[in-house]
Length: 175
View 1 (cartoon, rainbow, N blue to C red):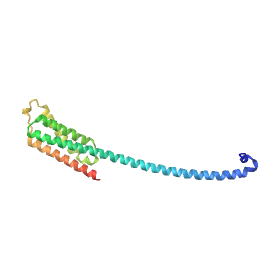
View 2 (view 1 turned 180 degrees about the horizontal axis):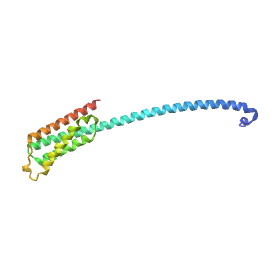
View 3 (view 1 turned 30 degrees about the vertical axis):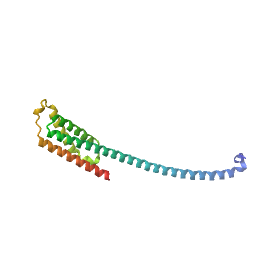
């Protein structure tokens, strides 16, 4: 039964079957290759969608972190204002330090919607650092010369900056 392909009288029959089986194999190979290409394209599209979703989640996490840091910064500025009015310079330096840490984190999160605030954040950090250095560098706290009105105005400017940052973050969240 399995010897007929090797018999000389079956040569033409074997060639005919071989030809048609070769054609069927070629068609199956081409169709299989087309299906494989289609599956690769679908997989690539899904992978791109997953990557886009991961980027969106990362941006949302950064925005959430920025929200938290703005809340911390606002609280620190409220406490700093109280310390300023009471002339509690050490507490003022501590509260401004907390503000500086929070605003620095916001700066480092590198959120594209906050790019317009880079200069304002930088100026705010510089002002806070100078104020803290002036307070911490003085050995006699009673001789510290801090202009209450000017510092209160700076705190108000910092609060406005934080409010603007929050509005930008909320605009991003609504998109």
